Length: 216
Image (cartoon, rainbow, N blue to C red; front, side, top):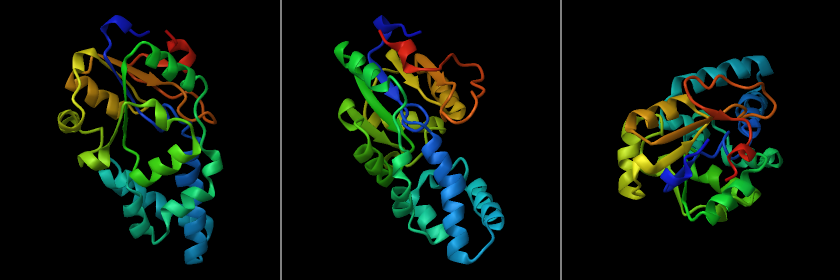
């Protein structure tokens, strides 16, 4: 599925791609509304309705991914709440084998994530992923989420790469579409970002069910 001889740089998403999205889905859709309900003496259904409406208003912006924003918005300690369910953080099967194999091929590996730095710290502490990347690019440092076409130009100033010889693996269709428009040479989607949910629609993109498929 990968033209290895045309690849210099591997760009990898984190949540839903390398890590099981179940942690994030459970956290934002179940754990946060429950804690919000407790703090505000609300029925759980009412809390969910209110919290999800706030999520919807932030969708597509950097605030959507910002734990500091949500701490202020919901008046909850989001990093602390994340630690309460951090036992759910899990690396997808065969990811570590894949990263080791790519390292052996001497390809540059860059993590490109919308995750906030505080979230990244929790996930790196909980998993063995951190040592596998040549660089980490966080959209909060760039000032735009990956869904925005201008993100990729701004990223070039931080971590330059040849877009024609790069591969991006990501579970987000808006991100893959912005990368396609930018001209990134190879693109792959992910069928099951959340191991507890059915396969998702991957649109016009080729996709993987497991990183085992990509082992060179």
